[in-house]
Image (tube, rainbow, N blue to C red; front, side, top):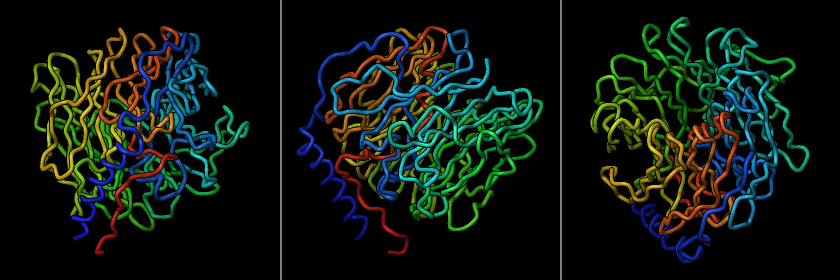
Length: 494
């Protein structure tokens, strides 16, 4: 009975979104060039967090508009240490091309901004926070890596100084991936997970879980190390190389606790994605499920992403990228979708989407509710094709449809990184972002119903700074701030 009620509510959501948001979400036509030295992009906390916590998970300054993040991890640009630009959302048909905050790394080669995400409200002060990875940082040793969290706040309270720092050890590459983990332990405070995929020297990598609290400690003046983590996750300790290359979270068993997903693309033979279930109390570091693909040497787990419920069954789902999959040709790439369920996530893929040619499809993943129907949607990017494909969720789907509903173009970049920036203009639809780090651009497209591909603007960095490289480090949530149309998550056993 509860599943039938929820499906009815999902259908009502779709009708409500069209009626109350005017169908096209209030989008305006045309592209807008924001000019040089500008940036935008996003990372999003775990499904339904805005509903559970009463705080917009991407509103860093508390003005009820989702904000925009894009990382530029540096190379030969003006800031070789890397930076992240923050743009505050507003009731506007285009994005303001002037950064409201610029967060900058410590030293040249740090790769600050290689991964970036909205952390949710990690310190329980009612403002969303930002988490940034610097896998090249050397403060803890060569390629040790670093992760910083910047606490949000009103006005000048939200500044460009880190408030929480964790350092890796030699060759950890801590911060190669970062993500909000939603609420893993049910205390209504956002948690985070960070990857340290290691190297051939250090062997298999790890992922660290940090549970949020009102005083999380670890100030940058006295940074913490891996021992401060609430849980240290590993795969096979012998040969799961690159465990932690990707991290994400979603409630894959519908029990009200978010679960951690960790990719290990270097695991024999084809790569593995591990699922660690959340629950009350201490976080259990033993994996509950292992997901695998079908292609030999495909690097399954190079990207992982929790998806808000894509098929209307009341449970979140997960996407896994395998950028070397050969089903559509050598290195064409693929993205797998696995449906969650009350008995746990299915280990049999609900759908496999193949790329074509040597385009490395599935290297980046993004999500959101792009058409405002209350279902999670998937965006998949390429490494060598200037487009991002969008796949919309469908109620009662028994399999995930592999036909794209919309294809968004990048600029002239040979890379198209997929991501979402939330509902920046407060119209009830999440937006899609396409990052082009090879020419330092990021294009933001309006969400709408129907999804029509209207651009909010092209944001530009400086050639060589890899601007737009980090837009894919995202975890899903529904639009916050606008009236929510999210079917309820039923308690287990109810």
